[in-house]
Image 1: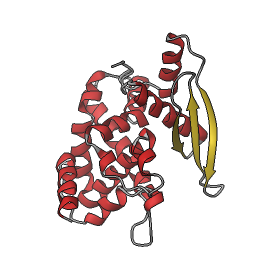
Image 2 (image 1 turned 90 degrees about the horizontal axis):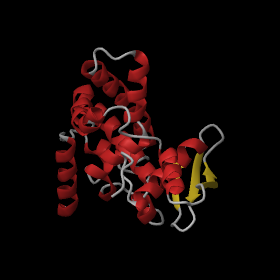
Image 3 (image 1 turned 45 degrees about the vertical axis):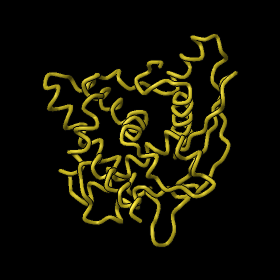
Image 4 (image 1 turned 30 degrees about the vertical axis):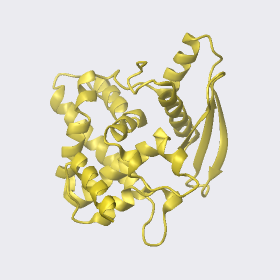
Amino acid sequence: MTDARDARGRLETALGHRFENPHLLTQALTHRSAADESTPSNERLEFLGDRVLGLVVARMLVARFPDAEEGEMSRRLTALVRREALAEVAARIDLASHVRFGPSDAKAGRENAGLLADACEAVIGALFLDGGLDAAQSFIAEAWAAMMDDGEGAVRDAKTRLQEWAQGRGRSLPRYEVTDREGPAHAPQFVVTVRVDGEPEATGEGTSKRAAEQAAASALLDRLGTNAGGQKR
């Protein structure tokens, strides 16, 4: 119990917020494979966090770039709210060590950049519900500051980066395959596996094939040692 409290305390320090309702943070960290009657999955909080992130980043862009035109602002916004950006923030605050997965999904889940990006959005949703817009904005402003300064090219499309990586080394193009589909027709959840010759495969999840492909590409880039900015280690 003490270790759990210490871990939560470290995460709250990284988030810059102490939760009045600890259950909100617990829910934000609960993947659907670990959900039960007492703690639902983080999917609803993820939905909310996505909208809060978009609003806060848009406000930051308006303040930071007063002379930028709408097209440039849209490109910057798209780059800054991509899953790759969220995964980078999740890695920075070590979110993988806090997310709750079911026993069969724990190892793969903590290595899945797409799922960690989802959890990061859920945490933002929890911050908003517990501390209002100020709490969410405070975390986002600090966590996204470096990427904001890097400009619109800071975070690039994961599938494009993986293709460029493969082509630059004379490999075949990445191959994507839907390996699982769950959920009702109106709210499907896709699992996609990506393969590049000579490299271990990686998987990603998303509510569309495209999102799952992006998550899979991002996961494979992580294994290959390529960070969210597209640079090699």
